[in-house]
Amino acid sequence: MSAQTLDDATVARLRSELRGDVVGPRDPGYDEARKVFNAMIDRRPVAIARCSGAEDVQACVRFARDREMLVAVRGGGHSVAGKGMCDGGLVIDLSALTQVRVDPAARTAQAQPGLRLGELDRQTQAFGLATPLGIASDTGIAGLTLGGGLGWLNGRLGLTCDNLVAAQVVLADGRLVRASADENPDLHWALRGGGGNFGVVTSFEYRLHAVGPVTGGMVLYPATEARRVLRLYDEFARGCPDNLSTGAALLTGPDGSLMLALVACHSGPLAEGERALAALRAFGPPAADQIGAMPYVVMQRLLDPSFPPGRFHYWKASFMRALSDDAIALIVDAAERKPSPFTLVILQQMHGTAARVGPEETAFGHRHEQYDLLILASWPEAADSERNVIWARGLWEALQPYAEDAVYVNDLGEEGEERVKSAYGPTFPRLTALKQKYDPANFFRVNQNIRPATR
Image 1 (tube, rainbow, N blue to C red):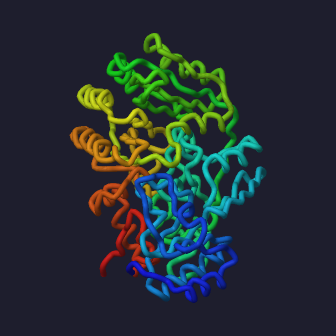
Image 2: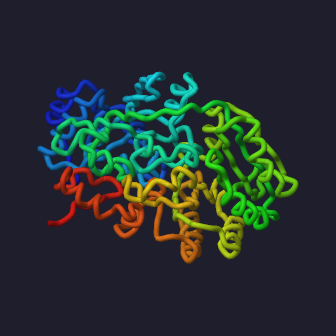
Image 3: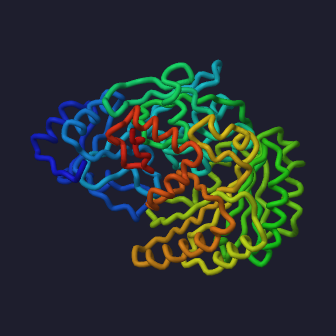
């Protein structure tokens, strides 16, 4: 597959096969249609097919296969690596597919792949229910789910992919199939952490759980206290009950100074949450204490100001089992020198139910009590790109002696084949075999790519 051009007659033929719209380089709105979350991504596909349903996706797959076209699949467009967009190929754009159907009796939700996290939460919370999702409400549910899905309910309810009951998938040969524990179970296994390597998911079915108001929010400390408080936080996190999930972030405060934020979400009874968080709030006098009872959807929007669309982003990440004094010192020292006030260093806790799932039970195999270390460099001007990228790489490299050879695939940029293997970890060999079964020609390759196993 290679970059192509399409003449007007060929684009017209694609339009005639779809109920949705097709946007090409000469059409109004093309530049807006190719924008994604990360302003570093500037790719120019030959056509963007805005699909209106599974039939449109099937038509796009057949159209691209017949012409040996490169294909990207766009859900929420939140991939930092820009995997939902390509140069010189066809983009299968699912952003118009945003329907949800909640069954409160069965405690399930059918959700289309163009939905954002906040939209799904809003629909399920109308019934006092939720499925575990991520930590920024603008994140697309498709990429989040297929990569794992680490969020504030992971200790109690596991990852998003652990709650994926079934999926409707368009395969590389154009067939529409269902993947569940009973139908195509190996495909169901692969979708729970294997990314977009196996097909285009046109519908997700999630298991829902009772989730009422939570005890959550953040406590802020000045940077002068960051080393001491992070040591205490690491001890605290090791003893967290399942229904309490936490994170820490070094960020720029409202006054422009560096601050440490400890973020927590307790999803059990409110009185129990107050007791569970008492120790976290007793690390010393904070600069601000914003923890309290709140609706779950408010907790899910708490970090949204840190993830606005349109900024330039460069991320580096690794899983870490613990925070040593030396690692803490490196993180704080580097944060004090960060080039952009919008940059964060995040340590998101993964524990409890998410960590107790067997490493071979889903394609997401990194099942440990651990932190997702995310060095999230973000800045508003293209001219500042080089120094921000250099800073992020430098901190990540310095922390490698304290990190695992493992990374959350949804944090991964363009980092090469070995890092892709690190992202999939112990399940990588089985994933290559399933890639050979479901996509032997590697048609779906604009992703954190798993090559088909060679026979």
